[in-house]
Length: 176
Ligand SMILES: [Cu+2]
Image 1 (cartoon, rainbow, N blue to C red):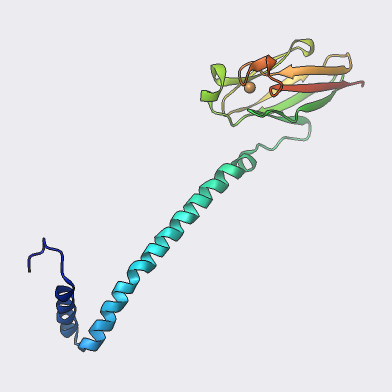
Image 2 (cartoon, rainbow, N blue to C red):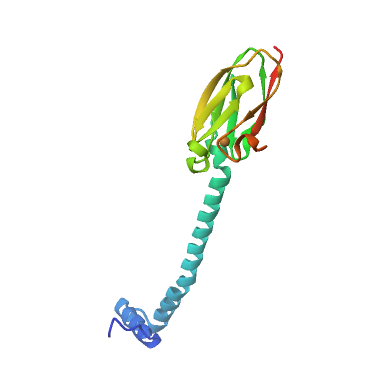
């Protein structure tokens, strides 16, 4: 038989019979075996489709919940602050006048989205002019001014910077 030609159905049956007789099977058994082999095709396709579905769902879940999985755990005496395209989280940070606080500041944003590859935290009235590189976490140790009030804080390196309402947060300085 010419191996380069596709096998006809008759060729295939002949081959099955040949194999079956070698294995000592009747032609009836050989046909059953051939049918079973043919039936396996769709089963394998279904299994492959299932794997693709699982992979897609897995990636989806990874991207949706990656935030939570990678979220650094802040210690009790520090304030967890995330910078993202959605702004500061939380958008209102409460601190006590005259105290020294640690801002546990982190972002998962990639450098390509950020001017200069970093988020910033700017508040001249509060003495804040900090930079956070893409996909990083750092602790800002900051002494809160004595004057209570509500102050603006913003990022000037993404999404319109100071003029964007999204990149604005509030820091509420409460009386000691
Ligand atoms: Cu930013």
